[in-house]
Amino acid sequence: MSEKPIDRAVVEADNSRLGAGLDADYAALGEHLDRRGIAIDAIVDKVRGFTVAVPSWGVGTGGTRFARFPGQGEPRGIMEKLDDCGVIQQLGRATPAVSLHIPWDRTDPAALKEKAASLGLSFDAMNSNTFQDHPDDPKQPLSYKFGSLSHADPAVRAQAVEHNLDVVEFGRAIGSKAITVWIGDGSNFPGQADLSRGFERYLDSAKAIYAGLPEDWRLFTEHKMYEPAFYSTVVQDWGTNLLIARELGDKAFCLVDLGHHAPNVNIEQIVSRLIFAKKLGGFHFNDAKYGDDDLDAGSVDPFRLFLVFNELVEAGEALERLHPAHMIDQSHNVTDPIESLIRSAGEIRRAHAQALLVDREALRGHQDANDAIMASECLKRAFRTDVTPILAEARRRDGGAIDPIAAYRASGYRARVAAERPASKGSGGGIV
Ligand SMILES: [Mn+2]
Image (cartoon, rainbow, N blue to C red):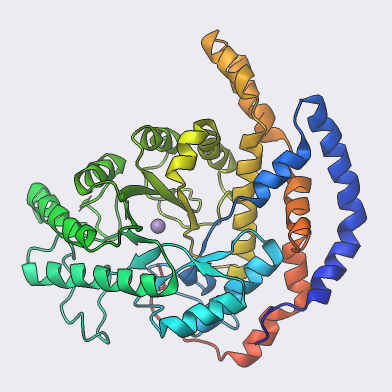
């Protein structure tokens, strides 16, 4: 595989085909925003400065608990996953970092670092995995069937703690600065688990991980209401998550996965509260209709994504101090994962750009005057603005494609790797 996975000529062809149209659309939008007192170039610069990490597991085809239908040319290991991440970054220019999962992505760290650098990629937060068993890992002989960090058996807890510390060590070697801990611990039936003792055991384990954290690292804990446990989970919501972050210390923060809440929960308000508490650590972006559907960000409810970004922009300097990690966490069952990830990164940037267009001074005035209609319209006006030319211009200025999915399809990349990578087996659930 060449250093840049897509031939530069493909990007140039896309940009010359669409360049004049973009110039016209950009000028028209610029004029429109100018009338609203907004300089379009300043928005483009902010969009260019906003990046989101892609998950290494996202470039393989996902599955449900019923089945997994493999795609063509799926990556067979972390090096090929990085190639696919390189395509996403080369065309979209929004995703310069990759979030790894250990042990799925375990390999020689030096080789990994070299490969990433050749593709212009770096590594964001590491993810530990104690929600499944690892029969091939001699360091994890005990089963996580009944939990990990909160398990009743101290030997299982110790093994899970040790695994997390291993992940930190691995992350150090490749330049990561954070670990995200999500556990599947919980129960299926009332009475199965002691809700109090389970949480106390979790906290003890989390403290042991925290104690092994390098000085310049952050620990993100991720809450989830249900699944794989269906009655209770140990870290079920943002309140418990905040409690954990406060118990652990200054390097501990809460990670918000948009899919990990009950339907209709006001996620943007949770974000606001975590900013207030100075404990917002980062995001796993995705979208959902019913549960943790892991659909493409912004594909079902783009207004909710916009409202989350509205809180982030509103927070201003307070957010800069927190510098939350932005990561995508999705499962692609029926699409080409590369296309889904390019699109999702674009939609995340879209929500950010729209939030930047909110007239904050006017909004505050409407709020203080109790003018519900005008306050609502103030947000809707920003949300209704089609910022597509801003997103495309940001990509073009950074050497990406004006229409990255069209360029990807024109490149023939998927057919090329399908010839090099034998099809994987489709058996078993592939949800991640
Ligand atoms: Mn997640």
